[in-house]
Amino acid sequence: MLTCGTGAPDGVWAIGSQFSNGKGGKQTGPIADIPKRPQSLVDGAGKIFTKSKPQYEFMNMKDDFLSAKAEGIANDGKSGDQSSKINAFLQKAHKDGKVAYFPAGIYLVEDTITIPVNSRVQGTLWSQASTFAYCI
Image (cartoon, rainbow, N blue to C red; front, side, top):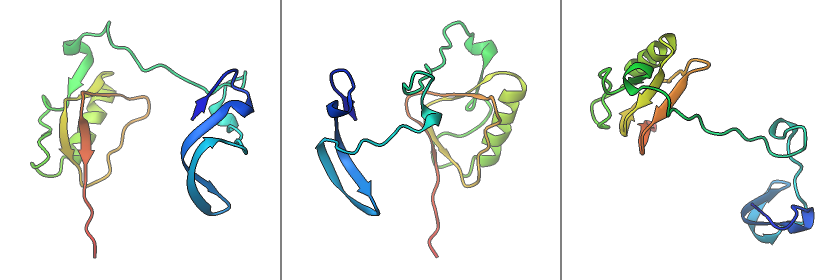
């Protein structure tokens, strides 16, 4: 969504799908009925809440990060389910107060991954958890 000029409602323009009363369609151009922003997404001034990404420039890779690959987690996408190893790794990183670092790769998961509250997780370039489903 683009907001032009002062951000007044007459300056809102969008492109994409629009849904109303259970019916959908493509929308390109000005929006007549602007949805209200949920209170949970705005600050005291009514602006969308934002938070910058964490910066780690003052942290030491050796002392402050724990690498998934160094902990024996395969990221080749074909070495089988890594779920239990990833869960143990995330618990260890959290307990040790370190950033859980996932180098680029495909981590095959076939079970739930649980990230502990207040964990710090970082990936490089194209880190992804890949899964699949069986159809019966």
